Image (cartoon, rainbow, N blue to C red):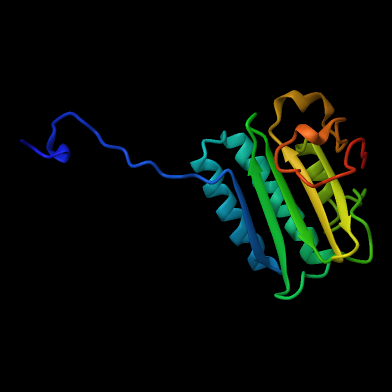
Length: 182
């Protein structure tokens, strides 16, 4: 009797467990942005997410982390920023970046054509079906979140949270977000 690995014409596949969500502490600075982008891209591709969703999610993550690096304080005790993402059952990806807050609240800007910055939240607004901000005063933390790739929200693009955010996976514990409009 031959071993299973010797059976001609039979391929054995080793199942790889692909996470549907990830959380990582990202160094507060440009190096952390690249690390998080690579990890998210690898995980979303491994989970079978379409390339367009992966590309949009990675760009949104990059913009959120860049904004946190530029405009906010890191989180104690390790001076990091937290990046979270999850892939929901409808294929949507929820991205959240938590930092130590800053002197201003995240709002889209209208920079001049020659400005060197100020376009990050406008990019997120154009790619995300919903996005918003949650502040945790006790922990002195601010989380900016966005949802990309959710087909039934296609008509609501423009940075407005659709009503009924309770159904969006990955936003558990984000009480009070229903009806937020940025």
